[in-house]
Amino acid sequence: MAPVVTLKNVNKVFGTAAKPTTVALKDINLEIQPREFISLIGPSGCGKSTLLRTIGDLIEPTDGALTVNGKSAREARTNREYGMVFQAPVLFDWRTVIKNVELPLEVMRVPSSERAAKAREMLKLVELEKFEKHYPHQLSGGMQQRVAIARALAFRPGLLLMDEPFGALDEITRERMNAELLRIWQETQTTVIFVTHSIPEAVFLSTRVVVMSARPGRITEVIAVDLPYPRNIETRESPRFFQLVTAVREGLRKGEAMRVAS
Amino acid sequence: MNERLQRVAPPLIVFVCVVVLWEVLVRALRIPQFLLPVPTAIIQALGETLGVVFSSAVYTFRSAVLGFALGCAAGILVALATARWTTVREGLMPLAIAVNSVPILAFAPIVNNWFGTVNPTSKIVIVAIITFFPMMINMVRGLTLVESNKLELMRSYAATPFEAVRKVRVPNSLPYMFNAFKVCSTLSVIGAIVAEYFGGPRVSLGVYILQEAKLFRFDNAWAAIIIAALMGIVFYLVIITVERIAIPWHASVDK
Image (cartoon, rainbow over all chains, first blue to last red; front, side, top):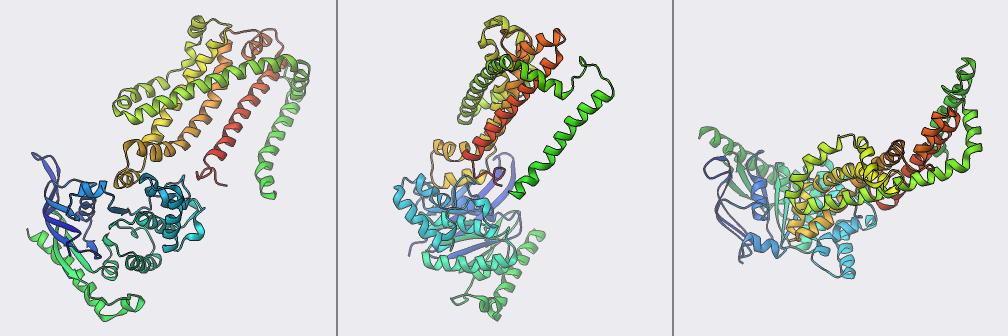
């Protein structure tokens, strides 16, 4: 199968060519296959969000080749192939829950009857169908983030880009959201790229964990996660889970050591 | 209902106490009527002069509301233009903020001279100028202080710039707009009355208060001031009511 995302020697330098201030991404090479769940993990400033935003065409790479489904990132964006979820839910306060989920469909000129039906289907997927008439400020943080996920999936994008979506949630809610996201991923068969700085979260969710290090931001290791499905509480308590968590942690430490040495 | 009573009762009690204290103190200390009339005398004067005070108030309120409408409409339109063309904003905003701190009422005699002292246009124009700047400044804030993630989201949907203005910036500005309406409602009533102090038709609150004060009929002047205060309060309440209906989603509205 053709890869969904291909990155070849992608660099991103902030500042001007004459006066480069930060090398945010250095020689990034990565191929992401359809239906993969990829986590980008690393310390703050390692460029994981920059990488995600570059793939989503919110930032332009300085050089290198980036293709999404065989096209440029810009074409993929104007073709509406991305669903975005940020750390904050970014719900529109003036819209009810269902109207928030309908927003991308409105922009994409989907007829209104179809819009409501699709939005309801998505709300059912995130188990919030009873809250469609509520306003965002009437929901808890976890519920708001579920609405954001429903909105991102409403137009069935091929690629879901998530930038620390559960970073602001408490540990218990976070684990529940992880299980829910895994279920949604399996039901929708979407490719997911997921930025996090939680090691257990990355291991629990991913098919592969991409470990990054800072200054310059680069990929130091890619760890395949072979945990069986369905993944649940027992998965989190299995010896293999701990082995993988340890592997990721060591990868992070190695990246840190490389940085200090260079 | 009980909760509502609990909210309304304390300010009501304070208000009644102040009025009673006013009456008692003025009488006990034998403060002369021309310095401070007692509340009962003011109420009596209001009863006797209600006809003329009411028609004066209607005239002044009309100037205030028309000026408010004109100034706010212009402020909103200019702000929308700045949201679309950034260069307009960069050129206008520092100037607007500077002008906003100028006491515009000082221009009242000049504006009276332009449009004629007894012509209502002179008062409407002053009120419009006074309300224009706070409206525009607030509205520009509402249109520009938008969470960048919201705009990125629209970008990821490949939305047009116009759609981003319509679906993100404009709704985002509504709470700011209502805040400006509240400020401007009070400003417009003050503006209209003070502009009339510099000259206006006989049947207007400003001229009436000035004339009664000159003739030492202070109880009549006070009666008119109370009507002016009520006017401002009513205007403000109307805006709060419209706000509740128009933006029920805003957290400040939710009770």
